Length: 136
Image 1 (cartoon, helix red, strand yellow):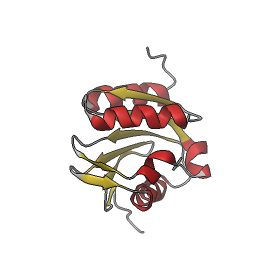
Image 2: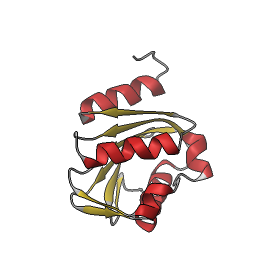
Image 3: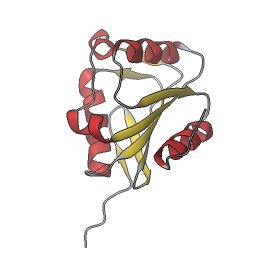
Image 4: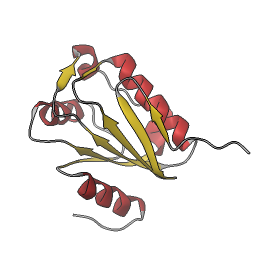
């Protein structure tokens, strides 16, 4: 029997699988987002979840940098788009919150995306979406 890890470390973030259908991505502080790094994070999500549907919580850093190419590009793979059921973003009132809002306005998703101030709120919302409960 092979035991898969429940987290994977990437250059930009730690991707944690908290349940078979819940992934939390915690970006490192002072990270420099780029296309290759984001692709590595997405690959880690896909590796941890296999072919199952899942929800995601992304915890954005307080400080860091964003490559213009990364901001302008839609990063999700076809498989990820088909399997993500809800995506909650956790961010302070800083730069990355604004950049995320701009990015998702220009790149609408097939699933619902919502912004939160805490991981607890974000996980609760994703859990409700996955369990089919109505949430405000």
